[in-house]
Length: 472
Ligand SMILES: NC(=O)c1ccc[n+]([C@@H]2O[C@H](COP(=O)([O-])OP(=O)(O)OC[C@H]3O[C@@H](n4cnc5c(N)ncnc54)[C@H](O)[C@@H]3O)[C@@H](O)[C@H]2O)c1
Ligand SMILES: O=c1ccn([C@@H]2O[C@H](COP(=O)(O)OP(=O)(O)O[C@H]3O[C@H](CO)[C@@H](O)[C@H](O)[C@H]3O)[C@@H](O)[C@H]2O)c(=O)[nH]1
Image (tube, rainbow, N blue to C red; front, top):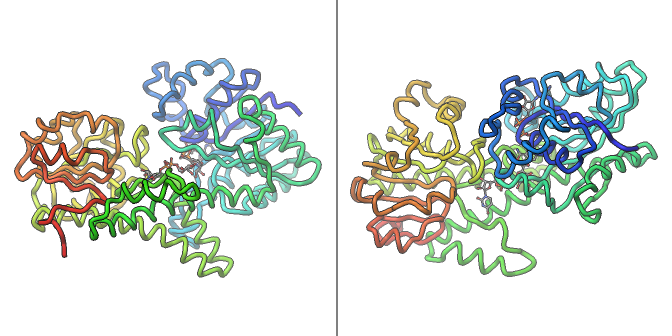
């Protein structure tokens, strides 16, 4: 079966870039990305490519090539469902904020709404592809809704989790380590799997396309994120030991990473991992384990999140402690708000928690991020509900110019590893700051020797602190 029309429900960080790449690589497939968020669809259709709703290096060129050729963005969900043989579901699956499983389980209401809408509209057979990250066995719930739609169409459900990382989404999509497709082992299931394999095979080498049963595929996605996040928490745990012992976490990471069994990637100590996925997916895994009575398994994975919370907390505690135990009324500049470089996404960014902690200490926080809009920053803080929105706006200012942001600051904290931070004239920044001038490098991107030669009191996560800062 050759696919000619694809619909993707959800034009977010996954749906948008993934479909743009499919459309670019498969010019004979018509791809329609739909969303209920009208503003988002309008932004995807904006003639000025600088206004795309998502910033990803290289994405604008791909959208430019494929848009209005075989890539379309629309709010007409029903029409797109009707016309497509294959429907990707790429809607958000956030952590539940209410009811049973609150704070742990994935909220599947958006998935269920999609399934019900497909059930209502589809009159012909369809292949449904789970692109969203879902708890293992979600496919059976989707199938049950679709099979009870009352019309004669039949449905095959595939799991095709997405492994792209933000900031490198386009490269990850063009050259994936693997594409994972899970499906039913029946002849119809195998036909559906083959149809999706054929789409990817237009640009992905066949030996990188892996097919499994649905449950393995769903669980592999949660497992991959749990393992990745665990590596970050593991190196962050070591960063604290390094600071106490005089070891340097970068040297430790290099030494262990040369062991081919461990490998060098994902061993960068930081102020804590962020992003919309790691915490949500681990908590979801913890919830699944608990629901099967596997308490030891649940506790094991939960520790990855607890360690991450600790890393964010200890970073802001360290700032307060170093600034003579009070930051009240002091200007503290945060460089970076995004959860990593090369993205405008701020979901679960460590910066949010660090800023909130400093605001609770009555610091005057100033934020500079090259890609994040000020309203996003205030919205992130408001979501925490720690204080009134107007108090956040009173205590925290957002600057568009990094030098202005740092002027008269008592301390600077580097919270995102944006490349441009390493290119600044740090001497000029030092000259304009209050003295002593402190830099807390939560990403370890600045040159310690150069910073100290200028006169900064410089702290790098996972390196021994100068003697006077030692806590014991
Ligand atoms: N962000 C990532 O890097 C990433 C990577 C891999 C997997 N994932 C997973 O992919 C899924 C989507 O993540 P995202 O970051 O793209 O989310 P997102 O919030 O950026 O986008 C989801 C979109 O779905 C739309 N939507 C929700 N319900 C809808 C409905 N019924 N009809 C039409 N549109 C609807 C929303 O308006 C939103 O624009 C999640 O399950 C996530 O865990 C995300
Ligand atoms: O050595 C490292 C690597 C990452 N991080 C931090 O970890 C977070 C997540 O980074 P990354 O994994 O690169 O970005 P995401 O876009 O969150 O991608 C993850 O989450 C996606 C959503 O599920 C998956 O598709 C990807 O495979 C998975 O890497 C960020 O805050 C990073 O700064 C570190 O602190 N140290």
